[in-house]
Image (cartoon, rainbow, N blue to C red; front, side, top):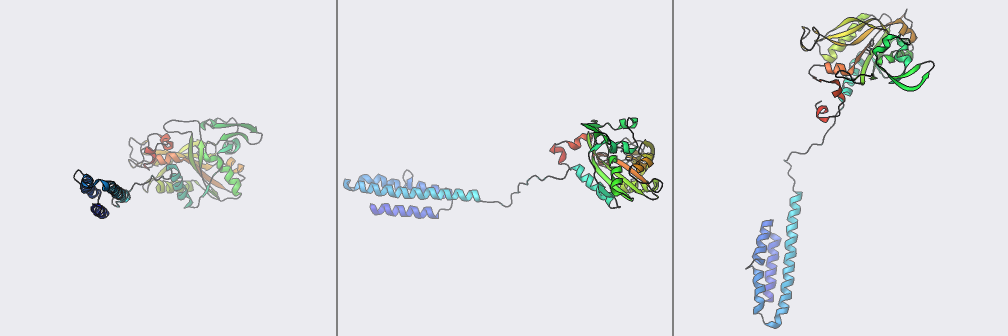
Length: 341
Ligand code: PHE
């Protein structure tokens, strides 16, 4: 009997060792411990043994049973482990979310690149600015009604006896005189791209927006140079078929002053629902006013210059194919919107 037990045990252990699946292990378990399993039968046989041997046989059976069960459990777990580690290289991976540069930053980079290609130098001037550079130096003395067009935010700090109140700069033109003073002696070729602030919020205005301001001062600069520069930009930014036109306008800091229109990209200039008779308004420009040159210590008898200042958000929205119904969406934090670009 003792020998039968040991043989059965060894047989079971050998089978368990060579089993290759959980199902096989289960079959072995049934073969040995099932209702008429080999081991179950041995247990039943105890009754047949002489009473003095039963205790000893019982112990041997118990030990054998334990070692079989231990191995069975171990094998089961090892199959589970393998299942967890099993790796299917054909399943498509989970891609992590990748961000991208904001639409406005991309546009600023593009504008900057277009102008630096033809010799402009990128500049940035304070967004918290004195009244002097924002208005006074631009030929708009205190209480001049033209100031009303820039719905300005004032910063609540004591007024400076020389430079006046402090404002959030309402346009990048406040960099014009600063640039002339920095350069000292012309030529000046500045492209100033910065944040601007105005008290306006509707579908075509955000209180914080961006402008890009060009300023060129040298001997013999005329409207021809302005027009050439604007056409170059229009083609580089909007497409080679686009052209610009100058429309008379008024600014205190340029004389003459213009509003610049660009031919409509949808109808090609014929006139459609999107444009005004074939043209879309881009922004302001003009020949730098002699008083502004003087404020920058540039002699208007020797030098002349042109300037233009346009909205980054505006040119972005006007570019073909970008149907943004409300400029404020550009600054939304909604990923469903932002991730389109
Ligand atoms: N600063 C003007 C504005 O904000 C635009 C402009 C710039 C006009 C330079 C003429 C010359 O509307």
